[in-house]
Image 1 (cartoon, rainbow, N blue to C red):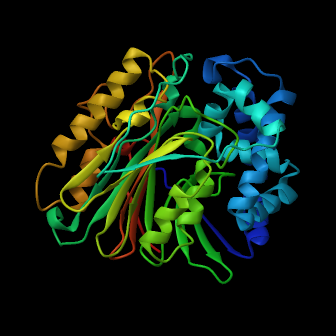
Image 2 (cartoon, rainbow, N blue to C red; image 1 turned 180 degrees about the vertical axis):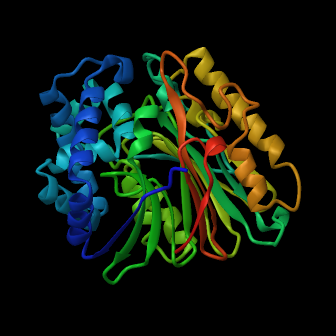
Length: 392
């Protein structure tokens, strides 16, 4: 039975990056080459760009990453030193799905970046207030590989032992599955963490020793721009020791593209943040369960969301509805949540299997219980493999 590889890194950010690079230099080079190629492919990004144009747009994002989390930029520099790959290329590897959003809007946003006016204004709503905004210009439908992830928060109220959960599948093109790894980080002077990720990426889903957990769903934004990509947000969240500061890592960031973020802590508090590049919506999860997939649920975010192809949209909608159905109960256990990630009732299934022509699959899944610092993860399609247990 395939097992999830565990990579342990420690020390300064630069040292952690260099250790990561030393463990998987060839794989990091392979993935970087692949992501750069896809960034030039109009089937993924809506534009045919040269390598030089892709790298110039990536370069425009670096200053935002440096201002947001210089320590994580040092980690990329350690990866760069160990692989010979530039920091710009590694940033694109890490934040590819957000970078795709940036490319979709490259004409306007690149000019803004070159003019030195980053445009950091973001519209804000919470569950208590909403506003309407004009739609963005029509752009090409998003690539179906943006269908990644069915994510959920389970409040302590409906959990079997009174301790809440946060978890999700992680779906991408089937070629990503061999690169999955669980990163165990012990940063010097910082909080220990576990991060479910791919080789060369600093983190996608995770939990730290303070009981702060974070998960994501990709969204397809029509307001993309040079800014901070989502793995930097995930790792900055994992450096926090309280939920309020973790929430601020999302709401105060100049984001490059769209992602939905789920946050939970050891007390059972939770938030869902549907975040586009130019606006976000915060929903506190106090009771019951919260499920999110890969389409916006908030009206003012829908106004800046790119369209999906019909089957892609159907997949996201039916996974959302099936997840809600499965979590509409009390006494929820680990087994219930593992079963959810293995479900095939939705269009394409919550557990996605590759089909022509796009070959998407559930590359893995993770479930976390912040109160007990337990982290369970599975490599590959959950219905075919067994979860493994870890503790932060």
